[in-house]
Length: 217
Image (tube, rainbow, N blue to C red; front, side):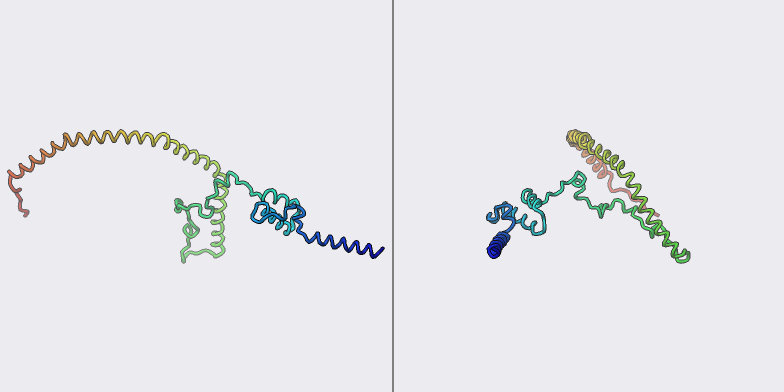
């Protein structure tokens, strides 16, 4: 009895070992023989790698069904500020005149110098006050100023697109007509008059002879 039970248990153990030697993914999905290169095979391999990292069967099912982790969708702020340079915020150098440092504002000559600790403490106060005061005031004024200047430049763009540019185009077209009329009038009327006047002046100079030159004493 004991030997038969041992044989049965040994046989069952061998069967369990043989079953455990098979990939767990084949038991779960049942598509272990899928050809390589197919989307199904890629999902299986991704789930198998997830299993090897210690994930649960729920994670495997989610990765096989959804094709991996889903990315977080971009918000409105992310989409608008994607190409912003947060390190160099004045890339066009339009406010370099206000980029002042402690050395450009306060300087002690060699003859008149305070204690070193006093000078260092003044530097810390200057830099810290300038830095944090600007940050706090900018946090307060950034939203209303952004709305104000955004509205201002949007109105300028609206006026330029829908009013100023069309009006200037009309003026340009009308001036082209004026230019053609004025050019024709000058060529037809004023050119002969001035040409005749220049001929008369040259004839008078020839009759008068060479100009009289006075001696400078």
